[in-house]
Image 1 (cartoon, rainbow, N blue to C red):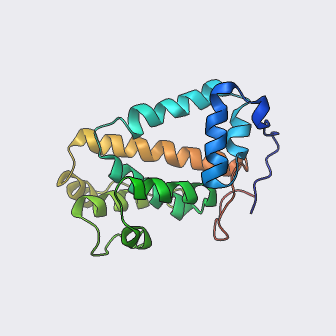
Image 2: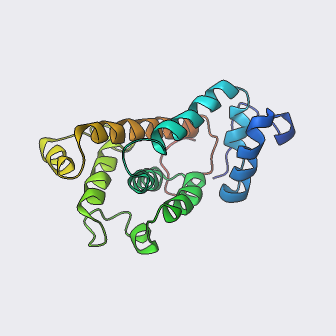
Length: 185
């Protein structure tokens, strides 16, 4: 399903200069620039989102490979075709393997380390499709075997921002969705 937002996406030439590179990257890797075009109406908000990636996603204490893993897991759970294309490439660049990416729906698969398995379980709790998700005592104990509390908080906030942005992009119909996606129009 191709995006069809009510807010008219700005054309590349209408975007602030600083956003044009992001637009070009979205088109070349993800196949569409609608998200960037719509965000062009609010460049300060777009800058904030970029700052989240610079400071927390790529600059935090949790290894980037773990964050790329949970980002790919969330996008596959949510059915974001736009996200899946780019997130797959970013996960591979962060060191995940094709075998791991093919096992993304199976947190119990043998290819996952204990830390990866715990992070995948937390992603399942944080996903849009699980409104009753909870950090249970068992999951917390599992996470604590691999991450200090500060990193567990960082993982939770990272997934909250990613999931909140997923809700935003689906609600505003700014991205292509997989056929199984149950969110948005």
